[in-house]
Image 1: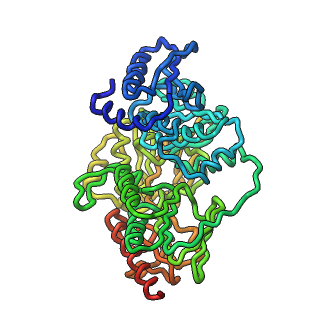
Image 2: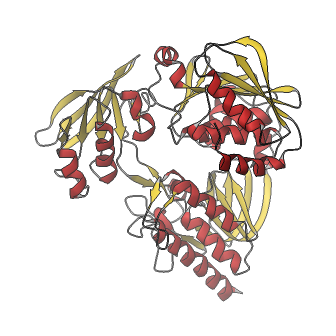
Image 3: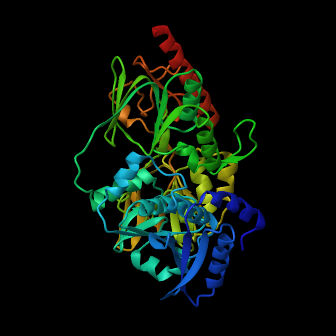
Length: 515
């Protein structure tokens, strides 16, 4: 049952609707059918343009489709979209009537250009924090594309299918019983995978010149948003290019060290960054990836989408991403035993032996959390000692089903058609190769800067961090960098915000000197 406060909020949200949207529900004798109907009828109460009708089909468990203006869309929900997926349902309703947050026209054209017919199913857990982004992206594509069908499937109702398909992590996107994508993925990631898998309609590729800007910022996390706001406040023509607004912070759960904010969460902070940028004339180009950067009198930026633009000043604030092990079998068993999110994928390994690779805070915290649900957890650390805080290490060592292997160089993920079977590693004390039988491997070995596209443009250190001076200048005039992608120590949100502001001010100062 929807709480009264939530229904009042939804009434306000659904006031945007101009056309009828219906829930077409399948008949089912499942015990939770009543729960689904109660949820959907609660939504119907929130707008006169929402309705519910039953169809003649009978299903083993609760499920329904969205209908827009009397015609079925490509969006379906198999299960009850509660928990994190409730937002996916609300957004699907709004997007059906084009009242949600839609991508720009260039991206819409790419989606429509996919070759159909496309039929996808995304297996989720309602407790998964990465699943909604994938479900929402694919739902959006199905609403924009005439021959695209997508269904969210709650794994709780289809345990036999999960076993048959060998799914060991969520979200898992399936096409024709084959895994197409596993784990966290953005709209851009998914679109590129679909373009590669299904192909695109033959069209004449067109370059699109976006013009000249005073400042172009690459990345829209705390550093990028801060740089954009400071630049726009100085009256500079500003554009920001990003794969997703919020960057890595969007994946951070709890934030307790952002001064003046006792507690916030990554998605909330990412939303607030975007709302703040909307107060200024900043052109935000989301779902874009940089292809090349060429320095000169002005910096020329080419995007993988074919778009091009020039910048009098360029600020690189692309942050960092999770580091891979880069060992045999890691990519092959992604989603079939290899995982990066203990909160999302941990429940799939209940009662099994698993490994965690990484002895920093994130690795030890993951091992502690997983120990509560798995049979045993083995933590592997490359160095002679763990790098995590002592209080965390002491907690891990106190757990009866946890053990630590130090001086271990992970060498290969071993598995078969059913998934991961073992992790091979080298004992660095004597060079001996050993193996531990595990069903899952969680990788928690820190971050790597998103700087590869700048490799031949500016100076970097051996870790791939961009070298900057006290004013965020690189060795190339007119190019600046800020945040986790740089050599600045202590990768913290508040530091990234300050560095972004500094880069924006330095850029303005240098532009004024040239004027």
